[in-house]
Each structure stands twice: as structure tokens, then as C-alpha cells.
Length: 309
Ligand code: GTP
Ligand code: MG
Image (cartoon, rainbow, N blue to C red; front, side, top):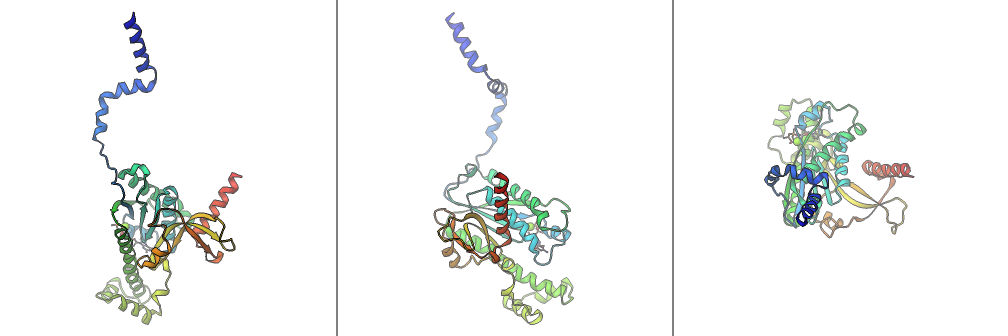
């Protein structure tokens, strides 16, 4: 009698709910979970995720991007970058140029328990879907096919490594953009074939290309839009609009900047990136100079507020 009562309690304990019944039924298969690898990223390192457009050379041609820089297409990239940073609060900096975007997670992030595959796939897919969603807001022609992006994770142990990584990406913009600007001027305005333009630029140094642009096309390269020359840096800031008091809290937003990040000045000006993470200090922005991307965030916020109230 005593044993029967005990059995009944045990029976109720194991079979009282669906979950237990299911886990009992599946238990012989559960060993397969052991094949999943623990891919948690080691602690205390900068986590950089860089995504890059797949065959964007073809994608840009199909969608008739302006050469060498299509302002609106670059904004689609920037809006997608902002979308990723709005979702992942632990990203302290985004950096975009051409068809690529890098995201820097703070060293002590615990997002997705630092599981590499989760972080990488989430960022890459969110970027891709945000890109597609924001496309119609900026581009005239509809998307001819779905763009896609690859992604990689790179870990940097020191601040110096991280700065060098970002400097490397920004130096890449400079080299490519100077070359591409000169190349397309020769092709589109001087009527050279692609091959002739390539030949004309072969072996030239930066100074030669600057000189060519100035002498032949009256262009001072340094006066070209900073977004083309420097890429776009996304930082979290508390934004004060024109006329707001310095003491105001302002509103947090992701601010696009097109500054030089290779020199020390940038890191002095934005100490929140490498320091203990808090949103950057207020920035006073003149309404006239309010960048489009920021303006859109502030407008979206106002629209959201209006919908809620
Ligand atoms: P994979 O990344 O290897 O798949 O090849 P890819 O064709 O994407 O080349 P890559 O990532 O090295 O370079 C990006 C390419 O995108 C550039 O070479 C350009 O052809 C194109 N691209 C990016 N931004 C612009 C733009 O604003 N205007 C134009 N015309 N092309 C752009
Ligand atoms: Mg690419």
C-alpha cells in the first residue's frame, strides 16, 4: 500500500504536464544537442562585426548607382547601420563606406551571451532586412533583386588594435575614392575608355591624382563631400537642437559623422568610445546643418510619440 502511494506520487510528478511527456518521448534523441559547439567569444575583447555586400559591383550597375559615389545608396547603407545600432545598444561605434559596415561592440557586452554565431547572424540579417526596407525611401528605382551581405567577426584585444582596424578601413576609403574619382572623371568627362583611364592612372601617387583632378577638372579633392572621402561614423550622442540649453538632457540619437578617425583628435573628442560606456556628450546642432539621417530619426521619434499619445 505504501509503495503504491509512492508510485502514484512519482507518476504524477513525471507525467503531470505536456512538457514532461514530450521530453520523455524525445529523450533518446537529445544527445544530438551535444554536437552543438560552444562558440562563446572570450571575455574582455573588442568584438567587431563587418558586413560586406555580395557582388555589389553588379548590384550598383543594375540599379544605376551614380559613379563613383551614389549619395542616396550610401544613405540606404547608413540607415541600415542605424537600424542595427538601435537594436544592439552595446554597439558603441558603426563605420560604413562603399558596400561595407563595421560594428564595434563594447568589450564587456553580454549580448547573446557573447555567442559568436548568434551575434553574427543577427547583425547580418538585421542589416540586410533594414537595407531592403529603407531602400524605397531613398531610391527612385525599385529593387531588381534581393541584395545580400556576408559577415565576419574579428576580435581585438587592445584599444590600439581597434583604432588601427578602423584606421585601416578609413585609409581604404581614401585610396579607393581618390582613384575612383579620378578614374570616372577621365571616363565620363574626358571620354577615355576604361582601359585608357586605367593606363593613365597606373603608377600614380596620391599627389599625382590630386594634381590631375585640380589641373584637368578644376576639382580640389579636399572640398569633395566628406562622406565620400571619410566614410560614415555612427556614434550614440545626446543631441541638443539649435536653441536648446546646454543643461537640457536632449534626446539620444545615433549621429552620423564624417570625420577623420585616424588622428588622435577624434578619440579625444569622443572619449565615450574607448572609455567606460555612456552615451557621448551633447552636440549642438544648427537646424540647417542637421544631417538628413539624424533629422529622420528625430522625425520618426516625433511621429511615434504622436501615435502613442
Ligand atoms: P564581393 O564583395 O567580393 O562580393 O564583390 P563586390 O563587387 O561587392 O566588391 P567590393 O566589396 O570589393 O566593392 C564594392 C563595390 O560596390 C565597388 O567596387 C563598387 O563597384 C560598388 N559600389 C559601392 N558603393 C558604390 C557607389 O556609391 N556607387 C557605385 N557606382 N558603385 C558602388
Ligand atoms: Mg562587396
